[in-house]
Length: 371
Ligand SMILES: *Cc1c(COP(=O)(O)O)cnc(C)c1O
Image (cartoon, rainbow, N blue to C red; front, side, top):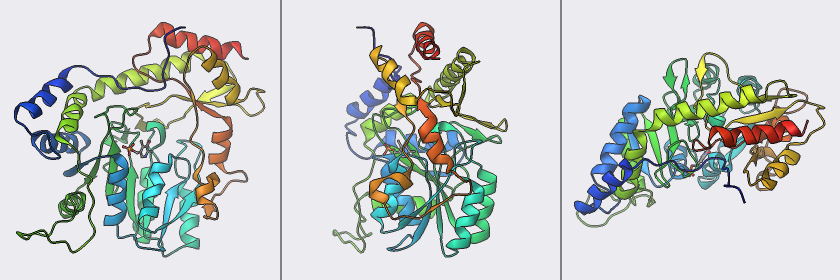
């Protein structure tokens, strides 16, 4: 059997070990220590925000963001429809009610027109959860302006888009809060973990408070609110620090993968996940969108690749189609929802940065052979 070609797996470099060793040598094998503090500082500085709280997962960071935004039982929250469930689940943890917002075609992210329409229907909505899907920045200016006009808190789920820029600024700098993830499949990994980012120092302090069991400042154990155990381990933070040294290099390699697909698949009735020229994605995953009526289904390509031990994945199934969110409202402007259309015609291709050119050529050859 040929070596398996993966969608996106960890790529490590050795420096991770140095930071882990330091944690062991100093016995900071705990959810606090120098690696945690430094990783927070280094990450905030890289993205261009003032403060960061290192947490056990991106999902934990999303949960605390929803909490800090003040979402209570029954509150409506507008959420990107085309995304991974982790973006929207934390709204439910706080009892909020997701209303899903369709995508536009230029970035596959939240459609500002649909968002505006949603505010007409639910003027009381106080929070918007925006994802930058597959590493492509959403239409941030338009969405930020709509949120400001309606007094809503904007949360950016930048879990997939770390290092992507929108008009020269990093994703993660536009929301009141933003979230990044270091899960194993992301552009850099700490083996698992996440961060909450914000310029609001008090909010980040509050996040650390919630993340360490909400202990009141008293000599005895006293609690006035419900807390969580969400802090990142100092060992894990060491892996993250080692990885951060290679983030830009990973981004450049991801872009190379994308551009080689773009060239290699040119002329076929399909296009790659699009992006406007004023932004620079991190190209986390390269995806294809098959032309309407081209006669090939994404699943046929997926199966064919699987026969050759090559991993590909369907596009995230839109949230409004998920059984768990049955009955939730979905706001769209086109005749056919864009998210459904992308789901039906799209496929994520192997985008692992350890994939050799020969391996990628093989993926391209197999796809071409189907047309
Ligand atoms: C990976 C991911 C998350 C969750 O991050 P974890 O660190 O795995 O909890 C959230 N949102 C999106 C869009 C993701 O891709």
